[in-house]
Amino acid sequence: MEELMIVMILVLFVMFQSVMEELTLGLEMKLTVLLLEELGPVQRFQTLRFMLTKMMVSNSLVEM
Image (cartoon, rainbow, N blue to C red; front, side, top):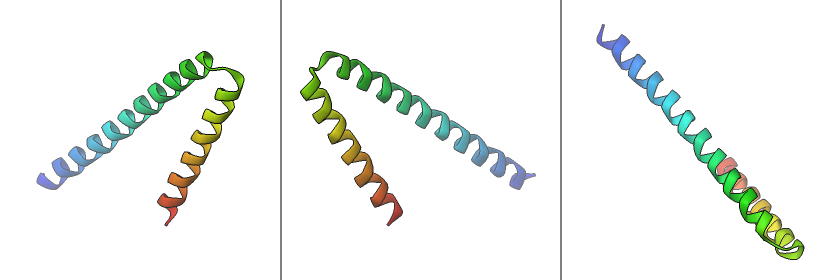
């Protein structure tokens, strides 16, 4: 019975964590869109380039 409780708690924790990650990602995307709407074309391009570079670096670090 205790083992079942531990498994249920772990499953709930993983579900909660994934929901929080989705919410965080959604909020970051909304803020990014709002930021990009305010920038001019050159600043928009530089910001997107920076964000893509940052994503590529973080992905390569995760793969290591």
